[in-house]
Amino acid sequence: MRISEMSALALPAVQALEEECFAHPWSLDSLEEAYNNPAAHFLVAKDDNGTVVGYMSAYLVRDEAFVNNVAVTASCRRQGIGSALVERMLELVQSNGASFLSLEVRMSNTPAYELYKSFDFEVEGVRKNFYRDPDEDAFIMTKTFDTERPDGCGCGGFQILS
Image 1 (cartoon, rainbow, N blue to C red):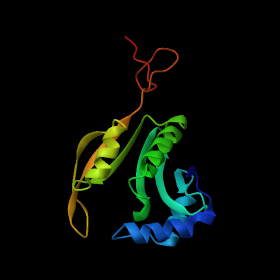
Image 2 (cartoon, one colour; image 1 turned 30 degrees about the vertical axis):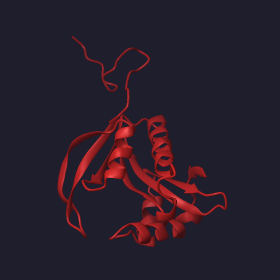
Image 3 (cartoon, helix red, strand yellow; image 1 turned 120 degrees about the horizontal axis):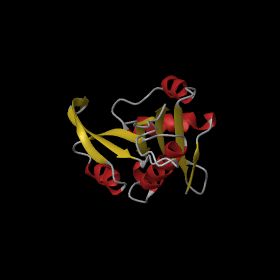
Image 4 (cartoon, rainbow, N blue to C red; image 1 turned 180 degrees about the vertical axis):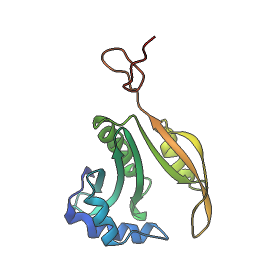
């Protein structure tokens, strides 16, 4: 398995994952529009045959990163693909200046919740009725990065003067 930044050629495979994994999948046009957004970061997981078996997307605006979707094909779940995608996305957004990465997860999605907890994401709140089919609340989970600067200011880039 290999994790890499996605090329436009993978968009149809990612859309097929959307169809498989979500009750309300993104259309190919929506995925293409998101992919072409300069703030977007897309990662794909490919098996040894080069088949896309997972993907993750996030937006990074200023120092704030937000996950759009994470999907792994059903036949490849519980094999570390989700972990590898999350780990690589954390590295990617942090290296591009993010101070945190935030996401929503279905309250009933225990495997995903446990995955994010294993990367030190913390529950910051709840979004009521965030999901449909079935209707369900979402946990808002956030992983905050150490923002300590070389000049010793650990205040997210702001220097506090007294």
